[in-house]
Length: 135
Image (tube, rainbow, N blue to C red; front, side, top):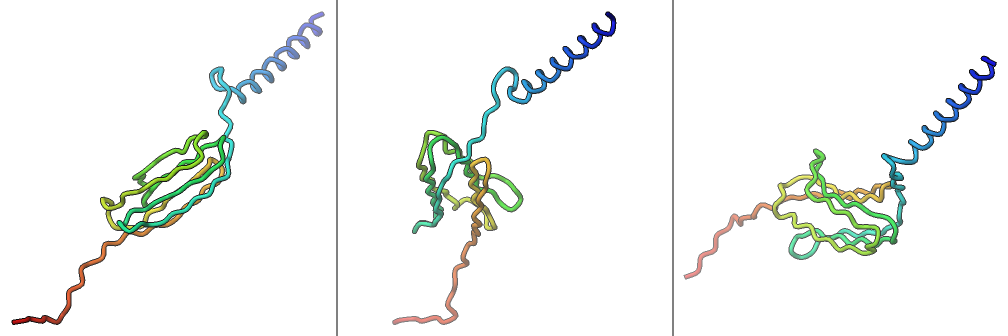
C-alpha cells in the first residue's frame, strides 16, 4: 500500500511539474507571450537638395519595423517604430545638428536587420589664391 501511494505521489508531482513548466513557457504572468511575426518590407534611403536624409518604408501589414539612427559608438539619435497596421512610412532626418562622423540607419523587423552607412562631413569653404580688383 505504501509503495502504491509513493508511486502515485511521484507520478502526480511529475505531471504537475511538467504542466507548470509548459505553462510558464507560453505565458508571462497569465498573459501569452507576444509572437514576433516578421514582415517583408522595402526601403529606400536618399538625400534631398537641402541636405536632409529621407527614408521611405513600405511593408506588409501584421508586423512592425523599427528604425534607428545610431553613431559608431552605439548612441541612438532617432528611434521610430512603424506599427503593425501601418503599411507606409516616410521619414525625414534633419542631420544638420549632428556632428561630423559615421552613422548607420538600422531597420529591423525583429528577425532580420538591415543597416545602411551614412557619413556626415562638413565641407570647408575654399578660398581662391588669386585676387581680382576692378576700378
